[in-house]
Amino acid sequence: MSHMYKIAVIGDMDSIYGFKSVGLDVYPVEDAPAAVGLLKELTENGYAIIYMVESLCRQIEKELDSYGEGMLPAIIPIPGATGKTGYGVGRVRKFVEQAVGSDILFGD
Image (cartoon, rainbow, N blue to C red; front, side, top):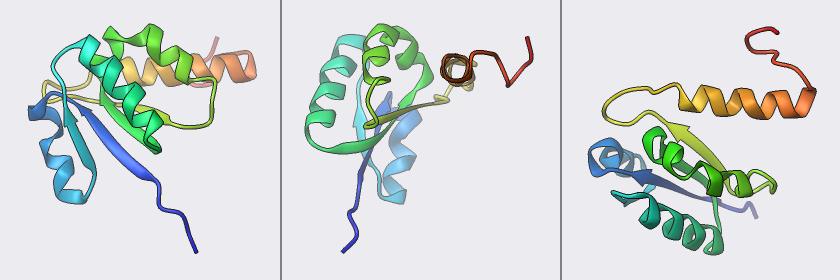
């Protein structure tokens, strides 16, 4: 029997409402304190993948760093309705540098 992981999307409603149509659980939040509380709740309730709009990720970066130490949940920044901010790529770049000791995405 295979195990189904739960997947959530957090952000402003304009950015996330479309994800519901593909079967993901959407959680609209408008501010950083609400996002921090919701992230904790989703983690405790077995969500393995949490997509979060970049603008919100930037506001709670300190809290997100504490989740980077474990395997789950995987917290993945996504562009919001207003477009890409570059935050997602920057975060991946940071973790790659920590893992391999250099910036393999853009060269040193």
